[in-house]
Length: 352
Image (spheres, rainbow, N blue to C red):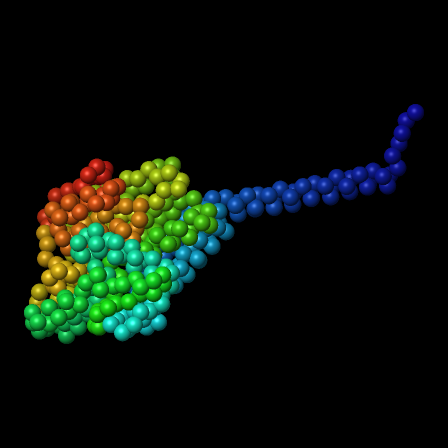
């Protein structure tokens, strides 16, 4: 027996085939678009934060990458508003305004940062000192005037107010500067701390790797096909020059930071003499050193930031002795001739 389809049945079959093909095509297009959306990309953005150009590069699916960049820059704004001594409502400004008067309640993160700062001050014999504020204020006023000089009495009065031991962490979240006129200035640690916080935030979102450049404070995290390469600028040549290159082959959960402190770029001119923007807490005057820059390498950017400043102030010999207190921390010292590179311990350095 031969079964024949009616003409209308054939049309219905063809119509069904056409509908199925259209549906399949739409499904395929949607799958391709979704796959591209979920594909891992490298996204980079730059903005000005903490008075410096900040760039962040992250490797993640587009939606995650965009959220990471938005959140990171929002976090930087929040931290600057909390840690800057020039923001009237910041924790630091409140502590300074109440110096010698009464303890001040601060955010838990600020309290924790100050606790770590005191530990680093003790370990560096006070060459890093978060109470450096009176000295920076004194020399800032002088540089604005553009001439004149400071008497030894003026310098001594400001220097006597600089002592990390006058900073008391009364209880969790409460801070007290015991001396009237004392002032916190976290310029030597705040950027490093902010870099650590941004990296933690991005990793919590699932960003597999990234690079943060916060005004020369470099922090990288995560694994890549090739090792991370971070160049250290040549102090006596242009911005694009490189004195040496550090390489890091990191595991997926590892972080590494390179922070450079230098006396070659930022300075004030007073009475025709160039004065460094970095001060010796023990003498009260801007540093004079044969070192042009010190770069410190450590997984913790806040620690690297503080130590880079301390090592530049104390000089290479004492810095190399101090390094023994920090297992796993490395440093690169560049001297005045711009050619001699001295590397502590076993950090690998290659030519650019």
